[in-house]
Length: 65
Ligand SMILES: [Zn+2]
Image 1: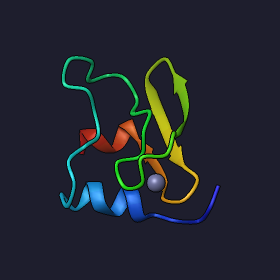
Image 2: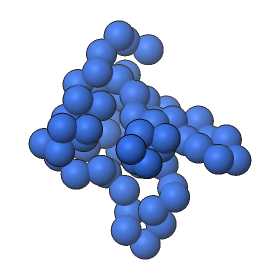
Image 3: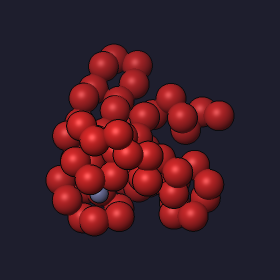
């Protein structure tokens, strides 16, 4: 994975909304909101991590801040 925080920066700053399906808010995003590429998603029982090969990762734990 690239050492890139573009996606995290954009979402955590509020520049773009969390890319979540409102009907399934606990599901990880599948598509990067910055480039529309498919994201690599890792899911554990309590959390998810989604990674874009260009824009870095997004973690569900950051939602709770
Ligand atoms: Zn991307």
